[in-house]
Image 1: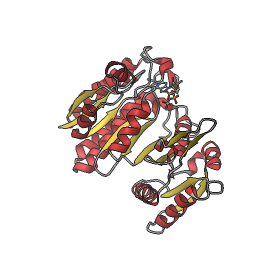
Image 2 (image 1 turned 45 degrees about the vertical axis):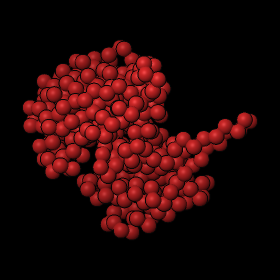
Image 3 (image 1 turned 180 degrees about the vertical axis):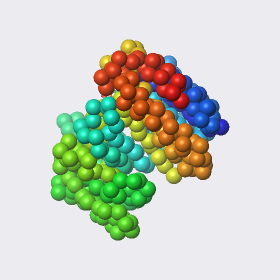
Image 4 (image 1 turned 90 degrees about the vertical axis):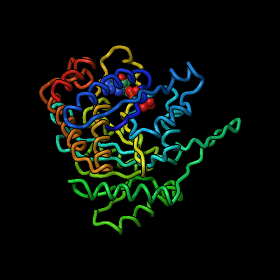
Length: 335
Ligand code: ATP
């Protein structure tokens, strides 16, 4: 039995957490058992306790086998950024794959964005100088090499074109992105995987123009955040977009999107982003523990979701009429 810490989050977070709990329960039928440890972190926790992320929650997450985190609202940076740093979850993995019935731009998109998760402008080194404000952009050789290797290992394992595209803006940020680019090119020499470089503005354009050409994109923190929201839109939107934050010993899985306050309380959120995060968690747990049943259960979950969507059982964001609870029940029944 795997112990899964689950942060319930804000906005649509609790609805997604309920959906994920039902689905994890139903996965028992597939031979993999999960015990859920519910945890509070985020805006509600900040209001109640004065802290968005307490030490107790961090310890509970660390004691678990993996963490599922529903989206957090305004205090997101105090939760996810701290967890990523504390647990050294250096690789943020965001797949984008087209499936029938999802309104994808094309039907042959299958890429993954590997985003460096610990430094860049998101390290939060900002300074108020009165009439000006300054942010430090930190790019280190060690972190660049670690994420580059992760990207090449990912490309090696995938069935795709076995290509890594390193995305940066080294023609302008010559020192920081110059370092990132040169480290990626150096790492490329160790792999039998094709390698190309692309400026971030060209990448933003090519994601729309010819998204089928991408296999694995490796990039820095801020660019990765933006490009992965874009890549989610070309394959059906944020409601279908899962993500993983992976370190050497621990991993946390979450939707790409935020707390979506505009639809909070309406019970219409698409839970697939979080359910597909469970699929990513099963891959990771299965690989870590040599547990084939866990990997197969994740694959089954993914195919259940996509068969439902293909047959027109969808939430509103992708053109259907199912509520969060109705769609969840269909997934549970199919499992
Ligand atoms: P953040 O900056 O925290 O990532 P954001 O400002 O990008 O948040 P989101 O909360 O990610 O905003 O939502 C962006 C849009 O996508 C909103 O209109 C929201 O309703 C929609 N959306 C996000 N997630 C879902 C979902 N699971 N189901 C349906 N619609 C969603």
